[in-house]
Length: 254
Ligand SMILES: Nc1ncnc2c1ncn2[C@@H]1O[C@H](COP(=O)(O)OP(=O)(O)OP(=O)(O)O)[C@@H](O)[C@H]1O
Image 1 (cartoon, protein in one colour):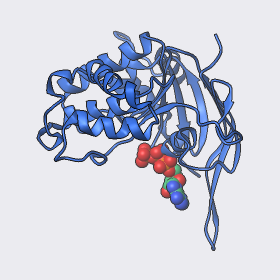
Image 2: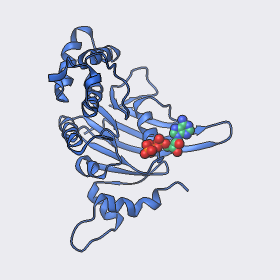
Image 3: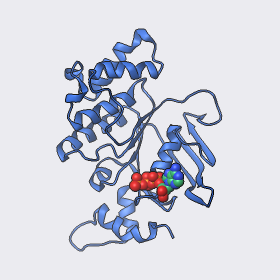
Image 4: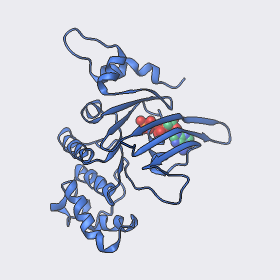
């Protein structure tokens, strides 16, 4: 099946008046419909820089980002991508969840007559339909995070970018979100997920891009990454965390 996301030779160099910094260097990968691909790597490796370039917030220095075959930076057409970045901002606390999403539906250029139905649909997907009329200021952190995902789902984008979607959430709420993310992928959405939580990656990622110093160090399923790390125990399989720690020295910037 054709890739929803195709990243080809993507690079980003930040230039200041004094020097230049190669945040991302010649990165290529693809994501198929229904596939969850996880970017894993140390702080400063360049993960958010990649998500920003794919999401359309940061102009690449070179390379191509194709979304369903549309070149994000070479056409006027704006490809649909749902983005969930970390942080607590973005909603108007004194308005209801529904009112907030109607505002974003307008921004997403969803036709007026379809907006109510679309807002209702995305609230159902993230299990917030029963609190649609509640003011966002009374939402818990987990509910807010669900609302962020609902916002990203407006207009049914084929690609979802999730940058640390469960950071700061308790294990139970995080687990509920994992199930939502898996259901979205099962329905055909392609997902790019960055995370520092190994259990989350073990649970969700169909494929891992192990990332260091702005480059893809290696890629594979969790089992393949664990095998590549050569960490062995007599009585059990090594965990992703143990394998990551073994590989981590090779992921640092020189
Ligand atoms: N606007 C900018 N100007 C200069 N350098 C930048 C800019 N944005 C990011 N960088 C640098 O690029 C590198 C990659 O940053 P990025 O945020 O992509 O890393 P990350 O892998 O997402 O890290 P984390 O796990 O901490 O979120 C960092 O060293 C960062 O300091």
